[in-house]
Length: 226
Image (cartoon, rainbow, N blue to C red; front, top):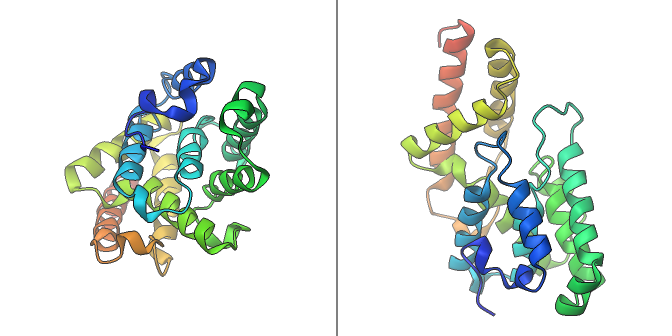
């Protein structure tokens, strides 16, 4: 099966145009600036490029399509968006038209759910996946979801500005403090990226460099000097 590099080419949604419309509408909300259809299409492109290295491409594709379908930056409950996104995926999986067309089995549904919920902390330790193939798919999915951290500097800066726009309801001081904590948590990890697919690609080094640059800007905005 050909792996799509654009949501409109997804064979998983072609037979259910209502779901295609729901997903596109969700990712087109005006409050979104980074977590948009562009983000989804970027991930589908990476999936298309590496499809032969994965165990179950349609599970990874479904995780891409649904992992940010609920994105409310105003929520203060950790994991709320991800759990709600997973609920919508489960609603999709139980849809009669979907089940008749895709025939997803329980293992696949569980696999997709595990990937979606793993984005709460973007850590392997928070996932119950143990099957070797499924674990490799999870590593790949988490890595491509965070691949923007390793983008070239100009693209990364556009991403950082888009995230700030999504959290425009926060004061500058509150945003800088919260964002700096999130980024610092990534720096403290032994590895930001997990998949062997990207080993030796330089992603780890670029991501750490970009994060350090952004933290420097955040500190400056908070009134500190490095």
